[in-house]
Length: 152
Image 1: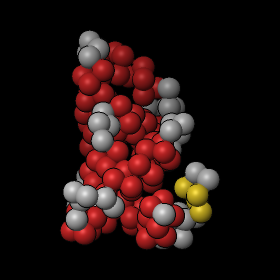
Image 2: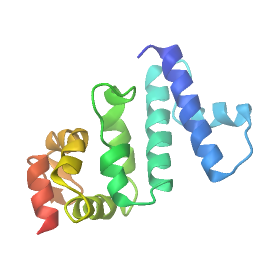
Image 3: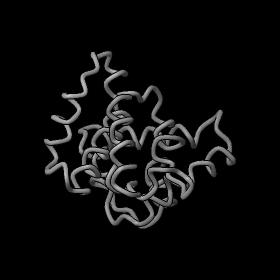
Image 4: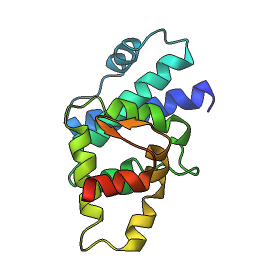
């Protein structure tokens, strides 16, 4: 993604987060928030901001842990944020109860009323964790093993 488009996506993410929190919008505040991540001329700064805002929104708006797996972290190659999936997920894991939420989400999608088709819908999440060696204190070799470890 080119920098101008990335900046626009970061602004949209920040806007969603601010609106969700019920705060007043202030464009000056947006730039101040992004500056916390580094130099505004650097793409890396904008990627860090995007990851933080997206992860924060996923955490704060989570009403059901299964939605994290089925929607928030179900990164597929057709999603606009696919190339930043690892950074977003890493930011999410910074929350103290992130692993517990993921574990609960796994338990939920492997129980009724979810079906095998529903679980297949979360393939983007399983691909995301399949490439990871560790997920918090849980060793991960593949999405399937992670699932088995948490549903046993």
